[in-house]
Amino acid sequence: MAHILIVGDGAIGLLLSHFLSKQHKVYVLTRKSTQQARIYCRDQLAPQTINAHYVTLNQLPKLPTFERVIFAVKAFQVQPAFTQIHPHLSAYSSIIISHNGMGNIAEIQKSLHQKQALYFLTTNIAAFKKGPYTVQHTGDGQSTLGDCNPLATHYIAKTTSLLQAIPALKVNKNIQQLRFQKLLVNIAINPLTAIHNIKNGQLRDPQYRPIIEQLLTEACAVAKAEGFDIPLKQALDHAYQVMALTTHNYSSMHQDITHHRPTEIMAICGYISEQGEKYGISTPANNGMCKKICNIQRKGSLL
Image (cartoon, rainbow, N blue to C red):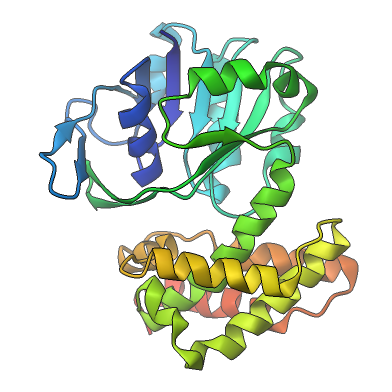
């Protein structure tokens, strides 16, 4: 049994705490009440209390050493959270990052101790928060762990074994390409569902095809410039497959906009805009998505 710290009690943080607490002692770092139980719900099954311990930042120095620390927060929250938490961790703690979009790996690597392994975890498990303390698990999906530094490469089999309670977990030796492939799906789905206030499956309507193709054409050009071979047809097929599999789901960005929370737009379409400028690639569609989502956030409501 290992001691695992999960940073963040959003939908993915609570899902991971539910799965991993079946085999390990799990602590969840939260800004909410540490006394309130968190609840896991799935289909017609009876709700289950998540068997984890909820702690605040001030409590970390008094807690046991954590073998693994999972940052299950949004992309823009990773660096600030890491800066706050890293001084309280063991020089041997392994770091696992999980979020939508790109970025953060290079920044985190600069601050790691010599004996700290760094991993990235992607997941296609679908879930949303029904309330502040309840997560609704709405769909199964593949989760993938990848190594981001040499130490992680050495210990990835051991780490995968330790995290085996996460359903359908596998290892990918090219996690950066997998992240980019998932980024393409997020680009095709997240901003459009948020802007038009629709579920994922509704994007299969032909009216959305031109803008989806333009968004992914720009993103695939950036992928090629970064050394990833992802043909446009493959990106489109994958995006439409995910739309079909999550027909009745609302995207995470739609949920963020609905609940007046900051979105990950700058780590998704914003990443394409930023890298496009770096490589001299025109990205008007992705630029436009960034502007529209940022305008909605400023207004505090859907258009």
